[in-house]
Image (cartoon, rainbow, N blue to C red):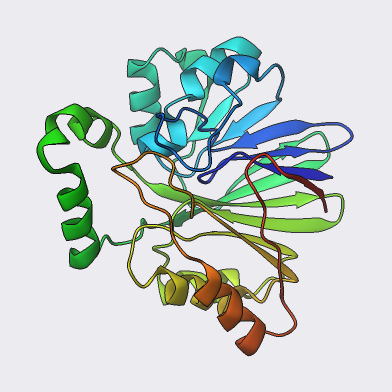
Length: 258
């Protein structure tokens, strides 16, 4: 099984029989770091697309990608409405309306769990608005027209291994405690959206106790809305407090074998 990180919370997972995408967002502006050379038009095949929530940096490219490859898109109703407004055909949408919805496909299994978006704290909002300044009218549609909707985390059971993907880090202690009752192998945890995000992400590792944790979403994907997040405090804290968990840092478009 191969895992490719496309930046933000976007991944491609490829097995011998299936290729599926999670939050495939590729569009960037010229200020983004690192730069993403891959474009939506270059995605030629995938069997399914799984969405965590409806913010633009998770679904902006989904209509174009899904139309080209014809894959079903699994998402919540609010996100489905946004995708339809942006051109996705209704027949391609697979609504997730209940907690712990299970999708079985070609010997693999995906299960969605209701989650929550990370809370943008006051200091982060002040810094973001200061960077945007008078350019707010230019970027307002990206923030206004892409509501999060019901946030989902996805657990994939593939070839005897379990991957848990979070698109945002707003999970409650009760949610993490419940998810932690079943062991996972790989945790894909986002580090974005709060000035305490390294501490927040560390709680995910402590609760879920994965063999491997792969941080994501720390990239400066769409300045000035975004900024780069220094994840080294998280990496050091995991190594100190969770020594049995390996931290694996990926670069954009890197592919690793799980």
